[in-house]
Length: 299
Image (cartoon, rainbow, N blue to C red; front, side, top):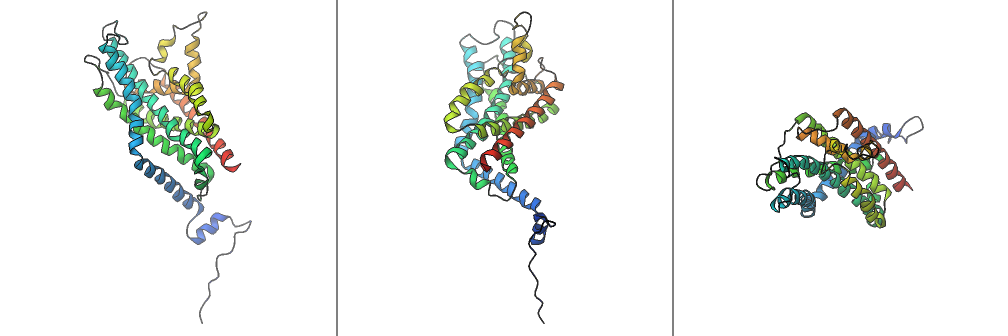
């Protein structure tokens, strides 16, 4: 006599969905991992198809900064730091570390915040993503991971540009501290991508000009790209270094100072300040971004 096998029973209050998933063939955790990997692969595939846009977007900003400050200004006799022996090369060394941090910041904004503003506002593509079989929070984290990988590429691009684009006699003298560098790059990439997630869930397309004018621009110029944090001490009112204290609210200052510690022997902010504060910023931005993401997709 043939034996008839009964189908798996429907989940009950005492039998969670993950248990039923294991009966069908895979657990909820495995399904989430597979869906997360698929979303990340999709983002990388889209990036590969858009390399003609991505590569110029990534290269143009660090190239112009290095070209203007390290090539054009020295050529016309207005090089920064040219009033003292080796001053232009010293500025070049300071600038390269700042440009690495700034490139990572812009990549986090451009690769996470701006696409999310469009997906929430125009394309509605985000609705397809949240239908994937994984928690909504993991969809947001997938955006951060994809943005962090693009930030890693942006950081690597700066070094060949700085090596070849400079006037004669103006040479960045980099002293690489590998342990700091290999820990600072992923931390900076995750922090800026998480910041991009926060911006992307709190701005709509009409507010993008205000985002750049009121937030990104001050972050850029007060983020230590062109100067070290330690050199701000003389800017005082009543003996209080107000600007040096004010810029500590800027996450970019910790990134640029971290790369100065990783790439130079110049004075910089203490590492026991840089690492905890950056980790705190990364956790804060990621938390705010996930909360904002959940609110937008579930409302």
